[in-house]
Image 1 (cartoon, helix red, strand yellow):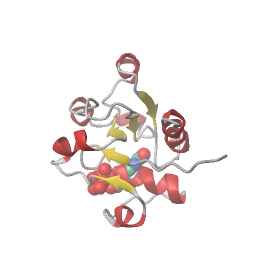
Image 2: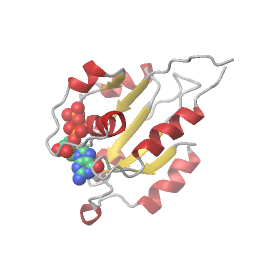
Image 3: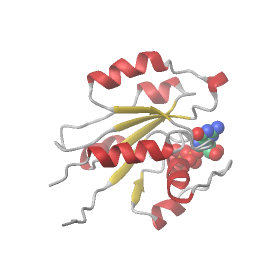
Image 4: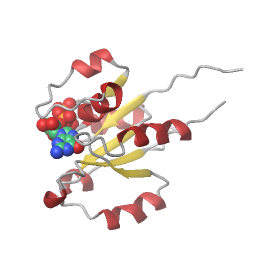
Length: 147
Ligand code: GTP
């Protein structure tokens, strides 16, 4: 029969990369140009680290996804994915704000091989246009352990 499983999804990434925006797009199909923080964390059990610097120390404690702002090379380069603490962890790397192609600071051609080497799901997403947002969350769900 069908069994209900619960998983924790954690969004990691520096401030302004679009963490709550991706959740809002996925859960409610909405996008706000000026996103208030925190309300999503209260409403949905998708944890959001709210751009806190401390996320570096939180990372090993939780299993989940991560996203970066592809218009900010530094945010992309400093992303820390600490998998060793969670053997079954599924990590998805979201190259968000893919709609802002003219501000692109991250070369997707360079990211893909790196994601492949580390068995990360990698998708260019846009919370604004909704590109790949459902696809990313569904791809994470499909990789979750089933026992
Ligand atoms: P906190 O750390 O919780 O503050 O969230 P965040 O800073 O990771 O991101 P937030 O969702 O608040 O988004 C930051 C800004 O980027 C907001 O003005 C969003 O409207 C905007 N934004 C988020 N996703 C996208 C996107 O895919 N495309 C564009 N063009 N803008 C986006």
